[in-house]
Amino acid sequence: MQINQHFNELAQSYLFSTVGSRAAAYAAAHPGQKVIRMGIGDVTLPLPGPIIDALHAAVEEMAHKDTFRGYGPDGGYGFLREAIAGYYARRGVGLAPEEIFVSDGAKSDIANILDLFGPDNTVLVPDPVYPVYLDTNVMAGHKVLLARATEENGFLPMPSPGLSADIVYLCSPNNPTGAAYTRAQLAEWVAWANREDAVILYDAAYECFIRDEGLARSIFEVEGARSCAIEFCSFSKIAGFTGTRCGYTVVPAGLERGGMKLAPMWLRRQTTKYNGAPYIVQRAAAAVLTPEGMAAIQQNLGYYRKNAQVLAEALAAAGITYYGGTNSPYLWMKCPGGMGSWEFFDWLLEHAQVVGTPGEGFGECGKGWFRLTAFGGAEETAEAAARMQAALAAFNG
Ligand code: MLT
Image (cartoon, rainbow, N blue to C red; front, top):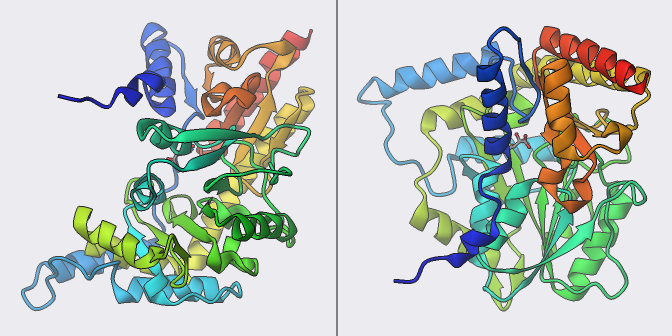
């Protein structure tokens, strides 16, 4: 029997599981205290009316013989693939519905896409970044290079001279730092990838938070991206689907490496190992992209943006260096007094009963940094912000 020894190279548990269990242990040991959780970036607002209506209607269809649905079509229902293509078209990006593959979320697609590539590739992963990229490549025993994302480069690594890699992950707006690439910066990555015959795996899960004009919401806004990039996106953050589960991956029809087209490979992979997101969920997702759905979710996004502002103001008032929170739901703050990330995690629980995510959990370059999420309830966020501001002011003396 051979076992995948690469699991020994992983941290003992997934970052957000560790954060969750440490917060739960603190809460259990301090039953009188109200702990405010701002660790995992999980949404808190309920699904808006137009989406719930579509969900109810689809459930009703499942109750009748002539409208009941079993297995769905490969790659997702046409109505949703077309609606997603329309969402991109409104932003000036032309995609064929057949290039859009519906799934249960970006996280699983980001992990599963590795099935398309051989075992001996060199993979470039930003540091810090969403831990799924690194963990899945460690599990597969791939050679990983890290691209440092630091205060000096605005947390946006660029292709360095002589950089050689086969696969590159980019996440913009970035989780955890909140930094987002401009179109001009992405054009540099695209030119590099086309030159090197590399593939960019572009995570756009937070694109809906972008408001600044010069920033890209899709890598396909950049010329040349269709011959080097795959994009992952999700309804989780735009529409509160973290529990409902729906996402999609865009693989351009012409994207080819090693003499093979990646879009049919992805379809082959998905149809072999996965039976698709539920019909009712795909109906709900399609409702997000209607004018009524988009209007409703804009209200929710506005609510989370306000939370980000409240947190930003508290950090600024406490004299803390922070980034993000404008084109992103995440704030990336420097731990005070040179504290380490996990040290500050414990300190913040102890002094403000607020849970955040230690930057170190996203990579070595996250050491000494800490992530806060704006996805909480408005009242809780305001309370957390006030508690943090008071605790940090006392700390700074
Ligand atoms: C996060 O907190 O980084 C995200 O919620 C994780 C995810 O989207 O899977």
